[in-house]
Image (cartoon, rainbow, N blue to C red):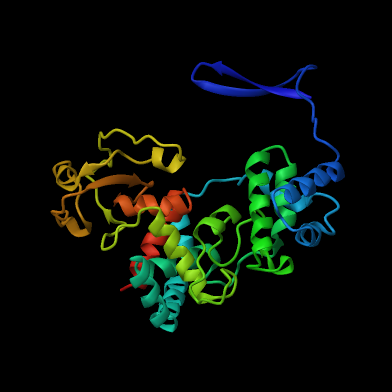
Length: 334
């Protein structure tokens, strides 16, 4: 057993593994015993016995591939621009416009109900699951069992596991159809079970909140999530801008619990950004609107973003994600 120690040498940080005899040992219960405790807690929470039995039947050990994917770190971190280029492609724009036309009447109803533009709903759908083409094939309960048993984020995933069992208990979907990503995100909007319980919508009125197959439920669930997180009707998410030559503007960084919010500036009025030399593409002046904007910077591209951008970050707190959704929505809606 080793413990990591950080040594400061000049301006460099070195991380070395040092043997420590008293380091904490793995004190987990055997998996079968732990799973028995989960069964008991599920029953105590009011999950029907037949639901517990069906959901947990056949789970004899953790899914090795799920743990591997949870542990895996990318060998390289793509620049922000590379993520955007991978997500906002001619093919994704073309597919998005096709889906917008195909579901126009339904999307208009959802947009009128929740105040979120149809193009934004389609863009979230596209980035999350390639417009429903790929939602993940992992059995949700087995994946969450694995991650709840694993020690890295056990408490979080244990609660998500019980949320998944509650979804089954309510009859929204059968256990065999409850599939999604290796981390437990479900359906075409890729909602975690706790988010599903809070935000999923039965828009088609069939008595189930079906984010796997019902277009109305899928779009309305995305829209409800965004609305409940503060989407402001009639406002943009942001826009690409140019900064003065050299690319450096002395503005304080924002604080926040999400890493992405700490990797953007504090909000300033648009006219203050104008005085700092920020312009629209082509050198045009910024709009004279009276609200705050935050600067997000990649290695080559810069964006002024507004409060609706925070709502996109609430769906997935990464600039690569939120900017891809925003830019794709703009292209789809043209």
